[in-house]
Length: 286
Image (cartoon, rainbow, N blue to C red; front, side):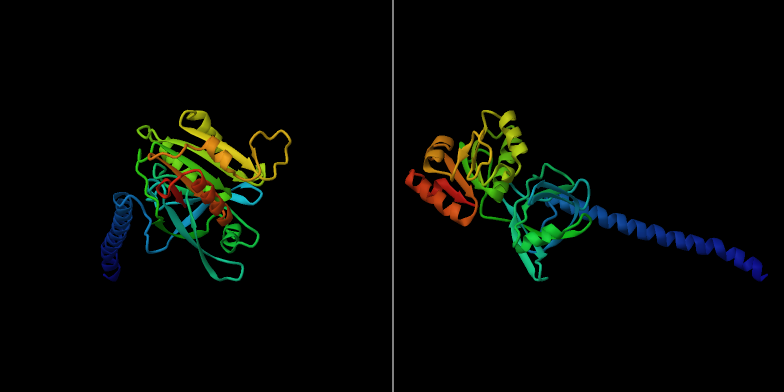
């Protein structure tokens, strides 16, 4: 009789277990769906107040001391939620284990689902540089945003002049990409990009592709302070007033000159622009 009773009990127990598994699965799917829906509805998975962690899925060296980092979003259809002209803040640890935060501008737009990319130059003594240098694929980076003072709307100016130095190219690249990939945006871009040597130029292939694909809307002029090739045809030395006159739109109510680079360069460019008659509303420093 005991054997018969145990046999009768087994289908009931299995049914209960199956019911529990189905319930757990349903809750998991519902939670994932809700997170996905919220990411899409809110136009992104960033939080300006709280750090969220994103998994590094690809690390690609692009120069001797710089790399492109690709981070996955929660689902293949998730959006980062970063308007053009804004940046994020990343958190890491330096060589002594101390927490450090730094701002970075992704080079991807919200037209890209599923991941975002950062281009990072890793300086020998940089505190956050250490964190990125040591990062391996599969590890997570704490990020919050959007942040930044610059607000962009398509067509807000007729033309942008952009003066960038080193990693200061990333906000310029992001904004240029947003302009050029929008067929309704007729804004033209005139970029002066300064570096030390040819190998220091970040995203050169992508910038040259912009110039080739949009010859009437995007122009780039490279400047090297220490060119190593005698055949170099770009600018030599530091960005001068004459270069700005030749390669940026002249002062006008419907243009703006953006600048982003080392502090010394930003200060020198501000002096040049003031001397050339660009008023404060015509200038913006990232």
